[in-house]
Length: 415
Image (cartoon, rainbow, N blue to C red; front, side, top):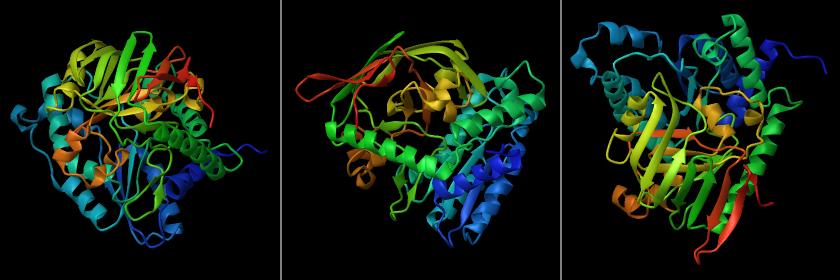
């Protein structure tokens, strides 16, 4: 097979985004939130693909991330609780009229390194408060939504710090294309097979209805309770109108809702966490009755603290996800410094809000009913990675029996 040019691979990436990720419907509008400006070639390719699929209108909101350091340097110190509400309200309006929603982000993972951590935390909390209505729509799958992260110079040079910028970007694009199966003879068929495989795993786990999962690995001995009626997701989701879509590309995970009051033990991260322009490294969390009661980090501990202390429930779990160690991303050996990719190389948990679609009837419950059933609600949802080739996972049944789910980082059951 003749090697594909970059332009051909980019077109495949755009088509995969529109056809598999969003499954954009004829006549449907699309709103794109894009950052930084370096992602413009991807935005243009996706826009062309969307119109070719029959979209009536593609609208784009742009964010130049380089404006953030300027703000921290010059803006009044008492202005960081302010936010241009139109930025998020416009997206909410679009979703409520049925537009599909695509986030394209290639942020520099250390953009805000060295900035005042209190101001970073305040600005992040302010953004999350305004983003919350969008997150609610995503949590109940009001429309198709998707997150993709194409390479940018600011990001690539952090992954490959010893390479010239152009080489770093090229190498990161190669890694992203491989993770997204772009070089397969038919990428869309490859993803349809991957989605089918994930469906078999999630259906098996939903049927088991384990009351808890027990994780053991280097620095980790953690029991995560699961609420009655939990549903495992992964790969394909459906909107409330019945349209299939895949919310992350790439994706290797199956995931569900943890019980908000039944996580106990210690978990140690195995990959850095990029959060709001800071890189949190070598950190651990200790839980008791569902809440973080102790934590530490070798780098950017204040950023970790800001996540945990964002609101009253940000120190509780909202997602538990299983990913075998031998995924294409993990086997690449690359630490992407980007959660979309790194979370799909490793078992992970998320602090903060839970997806209501992972609990039977959750999308119809009031906030109080959801919390009583074991669901967590917060303005944050932050994934962090703790899996490895040395991790074992056991499922605990209603009668207390334990069954192997993973051994040495790989599935311990067949489907």
